[in-house]
Image (cartoon, rainbow, N blue to C red; front, side, top):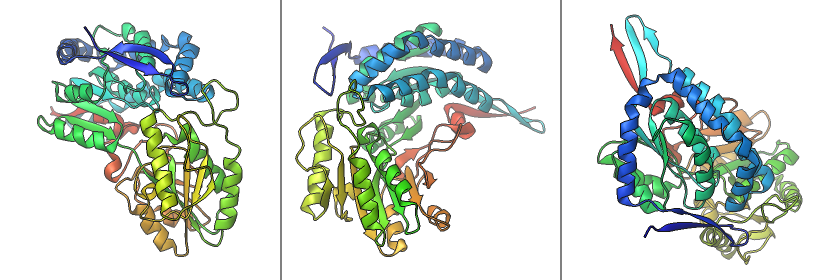
Length: 445
């Protein structure tokens, strides 16, 4: 009898459905099927593959609202954000596909041609916090590059992944895109199977495990591994703009976002005003289920993550932090908007990724100290600085793959999504990122 993976509404615990957990034998069979389909898919050429991917993604458009409702219910994301994610996935698909196709065009240096060929099979392991958007950024480059793909979505959001897969996979040649479900055990089986590349978005711990398992056969890797993003607020910053950004960034998706602002360092001469503004904006946020009007913060994805967020708050309070808003005793599945002042380096909120709707503030008298604390992390995904003319100089000293100056991180258009230090290995997006899903081949004629 097959094992079932059940999925629940994190807001009320309602059982939403179940999918079959893949066995080791089933994963082996899926890999064999992907290998068999690989040659024909590769032979189609970039232009034809691009067209097929565009048509496949377009097949999901009539079901946009159904998908958005399912995503909201399963992940807890409010319906406005869920609709935005689904529409971005569907309508952004052709844009990504064309960008990948352009990146993979051969180029010449005299009599030498540089070509981009598929690796073979790419295993895409995607997260729960943006179950379609994050998967989209990995699935499409892998497919357009000529690889067949085996997709293992998060065990927290299997239903939305399966629903999207059911709409698009049938529009592609058989076994070009396949899906397997399960938790970390199935992920390990897939990594150790006869695939050629793993494209992963998730935790740093899982990323390290993937690296170890992939090392035996030197599989190619592209991994985005989370962050603990700092924000610096200088004395001459637009404090209202800085406070609005801090709240929006820290609370987006209930704080369950890899580029959420997690640590704020503010010049002590403006700290009182900044804190007051932050609390004022934070009070305007409303907590509730995905389908309630005017909800800004949904439920935490599961009780385990809820305990982690609460443990970080309690640790900070026990070590001397002051709660400006919120509480260190909150019942699941929600965390009310919480603001902490007096963050210190020994607190878990400064050392670890919290992944919840929590704003943590510390003051500085010396900008050098603020830069040192901002950079004192194994993570390096994003960093933000708000300030006047000196902000550009400070930004240049921050150790992160993506830096925002008086705005959030993430570039315009087809910019790379890239982390420094232990926030990533390789990257996706941009010409260079798309090419990581293909084998570079140099041909001299």
